[in-house]
Length: 241
Image (cartoon, rainbow, N blue to C red):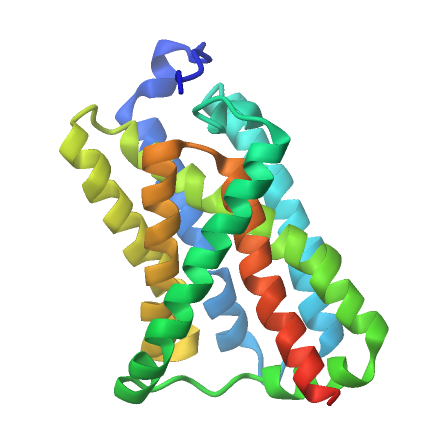
């Protein structure tokens, strides 16, 4: 499949220091969940979770798109590095979600037996509340996961990858950058404990390798949404049986 020729950036936008500005920005965004937990003296309420995943995440997405457009000369469509169609992206997203979910099922039990998880910071209470409130479930599996998980996290992911790749044209560096980005992604989930870091890192690595080989951000967004939505739906159904 041919790569899209959309590189209309100005010379200064390819400078290394400009890429490092973006890398610093994304590390700050990655740190947000951990900082939120540190600053919170009590478990997050359902209102807190919805506000952070929809409103705060939505603002971060807008900021990220503006930074890409005006600091790097990159539009959203440029992040889809290869051509595609909506139906191919949908099928690809389903397949990629099946791979990440299968990997999670395969590795989560041994990971959790070897490494501790942090307390859930009120997530258990939140899931109980969601089981009793269908509207809360709809809000979570709809706009919260679409904005907070699908678009937000994968846009951050690809933003980091492309900034790292712009530091060098070496092919080996691209693979190193994928691994480095997943380490940072995993560490962003340090508030979940070592098990959370490893589990997230594995799923992120699969996504990163996919982007390196196939270059479709749309597929990653669909896959990430389905990955989380399937798990949330299972929790909801089990709680209501």
